Length: 388
Ligand SMILES: *Cc1c(COP(=O)(O)O)cnc(C)c1O
Image 1: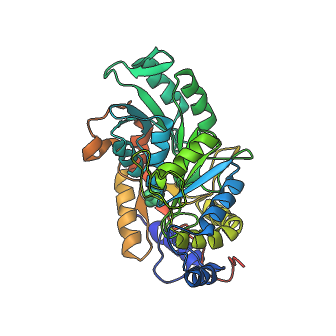
Image 2 (image 1 turned 180 degrees about the horizontal axis):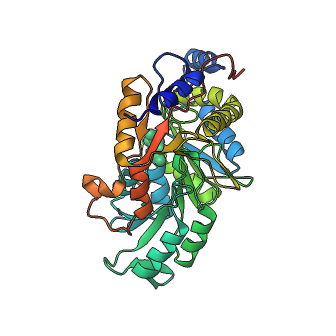
Image 3 (image 1 turned 120 degrees about the horizontal axis):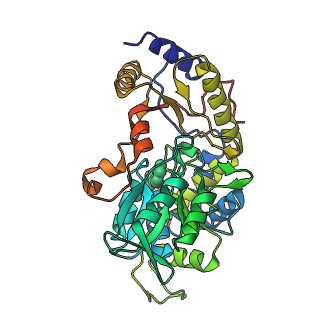
């Protein structure tokens, strides 16, 4: 075992205490309980209720999009966003291999196939340079659309992700995609509260998806949001996710195959209470990141900080180990000591269902896969980090 490991854990315990330390837990120190009780008392716990609309308006206002449509989870948000971006069966969607499985599942639900391009090391998100190179080498333009030279299929969308909350170079990605007629759908599942200059992520592409799963920056229990500035797309998103019912006081007429993806009102109530604390949560998460950064400053491992001009919500903190062996030793040690740490997701290009999908060399992705370790990143529950 590496003799610096105990030092890392004792530092983590100065922030999070002696008990078992999870990677990321939610905090309910505000109006959560009260709003949930009010919601139950009102009887509007399910698919009808005004808090869903309130929550949507508040999220739209926070991120600065014209519209936000609440859904049952982030994966459903991605699925519908891809459909509305124009993804059809037998088409291809470009995404990054460093990501959570949800994006590949959402692509598959649309009966399309993922194609993987590499990430930048300094953001861990999709590299616009890798994307540009890939498209130049592998696509032909026809009638303003880009087609894969190998498969003949259309590149119907591009889905970059803001990894662990750090914004990727999405303005450049949008620029590249514009030259190839490809709409951008941002996977902003992890990045509520992250900005490029003053602009919130999830506002650069045609559509974006956010998640409110229990381990994200704020939670609705389970939940997600589709973001867009386009009024027509927002209406379609609401329509598709609410069984595509034609508005009528009592008749049930549906004009396409829709989904029952509406966020229950109960979950929206939890979300509204969480949102009241979001700015404070973000401030504390930034403080945690700088405490880690100071600690790792004179250590042999590189600790991840967002590049200049980009504000990360620091959803999950990252330290880079020197090798896969050292990473495994640290994961083994820390988890056996009751400090939850975890490696990067297994690359999506390596998952059984997507192993045959096209991609570039994915050099940075593979490099990160061997070295990334996520450290505990919750808002600590002690008197030094008060949410009140
Ligand atoms: C959490 C997450 C999702 C999916 O969100 P769910 O609400 O869990 O369905 C999608 N993409 C990424 C990158 C995520 O981290």
